[in-house]
Image 1 (cartoon, one colour):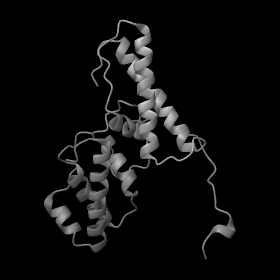
Image 2 (cartoon, one colour; image 1 turned 180 degrees about the vertical axis):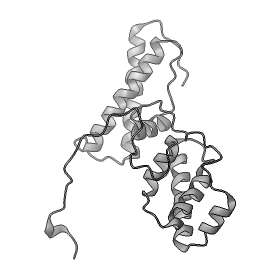
Image 3 (tube, helix red, strand yellow; image 1 turned 60 degrees about the horizontal axis):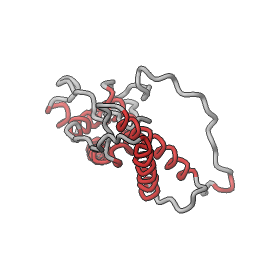
Length: 197
């Protein structure tokens, strides 16, 4: 977004407040928020504050770019950073299975269906993130080979996270190597009367 740097400090505040309002309105629309007291409304406010802060930085510092609202929203939801690069890690030729491997794997009915599902998932993810889906086919073929092998495997979302980070599809950790381990939590179980029988 190209906004000329204002000479009046109050103009910076006006631009930042307009950006905050646009960002919050955008998220209200994306999440179909109905009431300001919902948790999603708090998410919208947090994103809007981060977006307004980025706009302020761009107005007061040279070389600070502000991403499009949709791209910033996806990056913020996925990585917690408005300007995160969501493009997959460069794929080495060794990571993509050879034709013979994935052709044999696609003879397995389950592998064939999960290959198609993985391809759809990754293309949708890339569309939402605003990045190219060039790795989608290679990832889907690699996932099909993994399924056909019959070994334990992660779900498609975790395998895709591993692929984007340059890790093996079967890596146990889906966190980036430079991130601290997540805090332990207690799983929430539905009351017995709400579980369908």
